[in-house]
Image 1 (tube, rainbow, N blue to C red):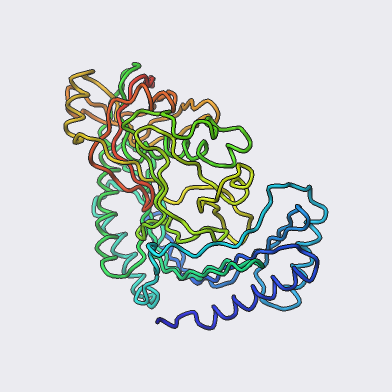
Image 2 (cartoon, rainbow, N blue to C red):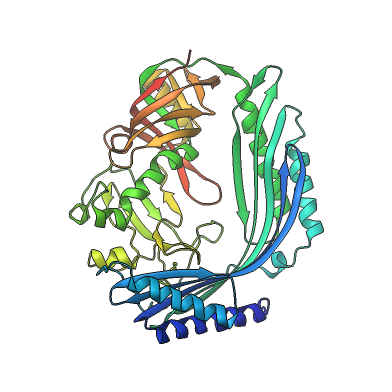
Length: 464
């Protein structure tokens, strides 16, 4: 077994144990600690050049206590005994002056699922030198600037190793070690007087082998996609069929759906659906969405959540039927259900509800076939790659700018468009107006994945 972080783990464990003990001695009925030790190195880029190399190392502890239905929370980055005692006293004091809520709860978590991946640690990645990291950044910059029309605005490449701890006074005790490399770029294309809008990408890897090739390949794809936007022309205003790339599907539809799937939204009655809607068909029967927390190559991987609850792959929609909500312990108690392992967060705050890794299942036809059917149906249409705008969390109405959007005519990409607005309704797009989804899928920023999607009833407003 790899012994990296042996000393740091013992220090984190000892501090967490003391915090729990001090909290109970101060009068807490139950207590939970969330701890994180992390060390990282980061090289940032700015305006096509190296800007800053930095390293960071530290520990953070968060303490949550319950006192007769009242909650208190504090956090610190100290391991000193006197500071830990003060933090515990402060958390209990805050709880005593906080409003009582019958849904506040701390529970003993079950063991992690045996099927869950057991390790996301790569010792070779942990041992990567700063010089190697500099070489990777050099290759990324060189690849990006191979075409002089590309302008690099900013970016980074970082390596991080961390140890995460969740423990409470009811017997929960879980740790997880992680290594991760992440890189990103933001840039635009410039050719004469033509200037594209800014675009970005990010990726991660939890293992060292093959990283350099992935960095170069992802940078090349990004550069080429940005430069495609230099060929521009006017869109035409219309209402009808619009195609959405996997990134646009994630930005507009999946992120908005997550709000309505949150157990907190169900409890507060601010979401579209309630428990009565479970197992009812609320979207198009071709729509299948799952949350997949066990994908180790995704940034949302987790074997357990912020409260120590084990995670499992969770069907959210199956053939358009609503199958589950995203629950933490608070919303689960309020709804008289069990947590689904979706309490997310860091030691710096109390848990919130969120997704790990959304996976929208592919459709039943190829992207080429779907484009041909789309061209036959409408002829000219807009393909949206990115989106900048709002989605009304209550009504599902969305309205914003289609960025990196392509204008297609008779099955051919003619040019990219600027100053083009799109608007529609999330729930109509995913129900009665869903035209089709591709078999091909893409992973967006090393987390959520989606196919291409085509929907009717979307308004396109071209700029002057």
